[in-house]
Image (cartoon, rainbow, N blue to C red; front, top):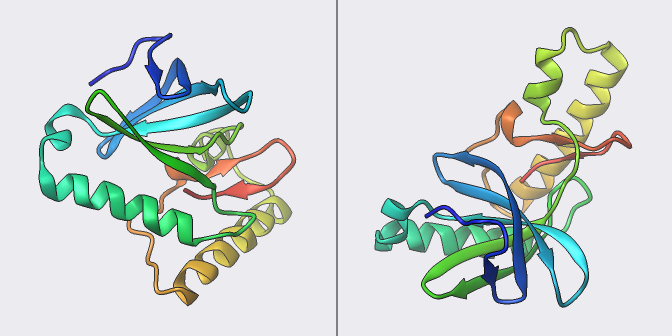
Length: 151
């Protein structure tokens, strides 16, 4: 299910599609209640009707909610409106690591800074028994201030 700009999911108003992948579509949205920009992830139509996929989606929400780390994107909530289920997530501005790699060689200091942050985030997740099953450069965001965020 694609959402058009202006679509409302609870107190969230969709602004634009940010990207789509195998596990969902991600939109930029405005939180009208708190006045902030967020990311909203919804399941594609075929998955939204699959009880197993819905359960996995909800598990993802619970797992994210259990993590609190500066290099792991925060979850703000789980929303359901008119049959559309969505994860409401921290909106992380900046390119993905895949985008940065496509620009050319990454200087060693920059690569080490990013690698340390990714390893620290993964270490925190692993300490809680959580294994990231889809860690790849396209899923790692690089904020303009140098902070790395994993989903």
